[in-house]
Image 1 (tube, one colour):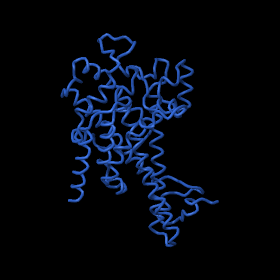
Image 2 (cartoon, rainbow, N blue to C red):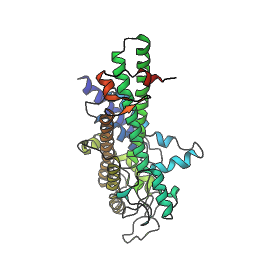
Image 3 (cartoon, rainbow, N blue to C red):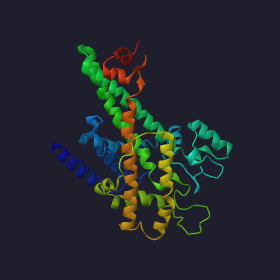
Image 4 (spheres, rainbow, N blue to C red):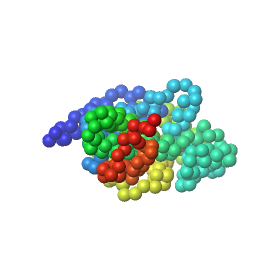
Length: 343
């Protein structure tokens, strides 16, 4: 009963957020990012740590999912380096910017290799964006903190020395705060990756490209869709109902990231056709269905990546000297020196 009450409480809170006025930001907008974070957290499997499923943690991730937008305006070089993490401009055939750019199905392993490929193709790095690499980086960072949390939790439960036990407890609590922030950052980039304009050269109107179907070139297209319209029609219950079943059997991170973004890229032309037909005016049910499906795609992917990151963390090695998470959890290794530091 308590869990049902908590779910109702967080549902009510999220629905209140949906009803709040939209504030324009360069992503899904506040409403969309919050809903992706909340829906994903509510969908986590029971094998994940209990602290992640509390109403407070769910609400925190909803807010922290907005965080990379709130970083903006810090100055240079911060803004130049970070602002381009929110998108990647693929052409209609899946090449970065032009036919000479790297293809979505063959993304280089490292961002530096991606940048090199762009330069070789005569493409300006700052114009393309690097969303796939921001997403993968956020996923891997979460895995590190999950691994540390596992070790700290296991060590705290067995430690007999009061001083050491207190340190483990304090560091575990710090790690929990970091994990929520990690998930918030991952939520943001996963959310950006579900928004059609964040995967396409047609990111704000069709642009200066062949346009046989006469799609709009309004520079307000992007902002109205993800902000004003989404805030009117997005609903937590609708998003949750549209979420896919978990896909968490195995992970090739690069391939999964590319496949996720490729699916979103496939919604760009349907978006512009729907926009041309008036589907994003008032609270048109056609546009509402499109928005909630895209938010559900983001929430589903985020949920799955959190679960996969948690499960992968059990095979990690962390600290210095390095210790294996599985050995600490089994009680065969004392991680004190690795956690506190040798010096």
